Image 1 (cartoon, rainbow, N blue to C red):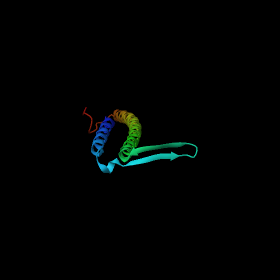
Image 2 (image 1 turned 30 degrees about the vertical axis):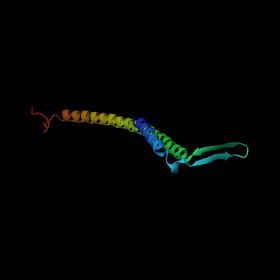
Image 3 (image 1 turned 120 degrees about the horizontal axis):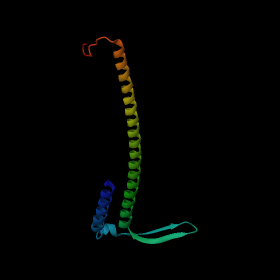
Image 4 (image 1 turned 180 degrees about the vertical axis):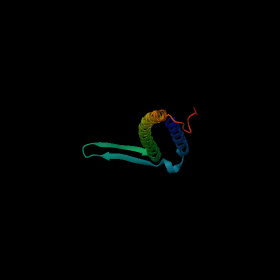
Amino acid sequence: MRFIRLIILVLIIVFFAIIYTQNLEVFTHTFTLQLDLNQYLIGPYITKNIVLILSAFVLGVIVALIFGALQSISAGSVSRQKSRRIKELEAQLSELSGSSQTSTDESLSSEGGSTPFSSPS
């Protein structure tokens, strides 16, 4: 749910950024983009700087979402491991308390005498 809210918030920010920057002179400069790989030429593409700014923003959001999702997955895994360990320790504790209670009951019955914690006979 948190990621869906974040995506909706990003879309709203991009929408308002486009509306805000659409008619401003500062954001209407054009650039030529191309990549020359000696064997293969990509471009040239003519684009405005607002496209570069918004695409960098969206790319940053996508990277942040990926890292957040990976962190959430690893945190869930650690949480499951710790829950499993807690259950194991609780089982061991109940075994130890059960065995110590039966040994205490056996020692009291073998004494046959009155103890401060037993009812008088």
